[in-house]
Image 1 (spheres, rainbow, N blue to C red):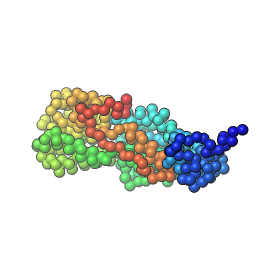
Image 2 (cartoon, rainbow, N blue to C red):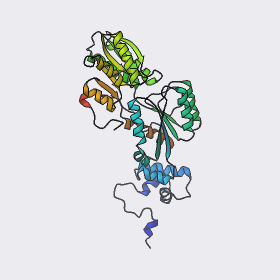
Image 3 (cartoon, rainbow, N blue to C red):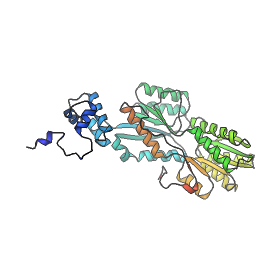
Image 4 (tube, rainbow, N blue to C red):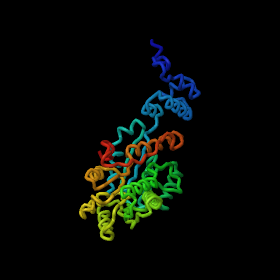
Length: 362
């Protein structure tokens, strides 16, 4: 009989790799206890199991998928709530999450996505309550509204963490935020427009999705502040809400062009860039107007290539998903929410530096 089958140290381990004894020492338990935990055998207290698994993870002894199997944990159920509508970046993000089962499975995660009616805080609050009853965590694009804050706090009371995506909400118990520094993003847009216009006297306009989103409000503030600081001769002539809708953005742009024939630039804060571009092309202004937008998609990529859009400020949707999973995984393991989680970075995309594999809907 080969006695090595029951000896956790009998297997040949390449020099330099962690051993069961290393895990035992790090966790302050015996090698036999480590063996029971890693093989999902009974007789070990839950707190000790977590200590052993934490040590094994820190030593990179097993892949994440094997550690979850050893822990006997059920997959973590995450719900992603995104606005329904014509914002191509958000719909692409949702479809990417839906297709990410194979990527998420090794992390013990199952994700579902629901698109809910845009700009409706009461509906968003109800969806948060509903998903909080069956999910282990909820990630959502926040609307700034008391009903939404109340729902987030209610989930926290039931130990269901929530994470805000793209647009944050303050004064509530959300566990974390995954998105850009939107004040800085707005300042970047203002800096680009000022540089394109060479700081000469000119009129520019803004089109927001909705100022119910803190992200859009912060972008507006950053944009206005940087122009006031660095290009005071550039006049901002108006702010319109396009509600991320291509048709509304088209009509708002046509209205702005009618009111201000000398308009020199447009900053599109939210979605609906295709509508803005259509208005510029119909009036044959696309070559003379500076147009800055947000969110790299197949559509905005095409607008960059044909020259109607000058620059896009965006974030990699894959990093957005990875950061969300990292936050929820940390919370489940009892670690600080943001430990080891890298916040998404703003990227400025021009026609000349278009990436090949960044789009959420590829």
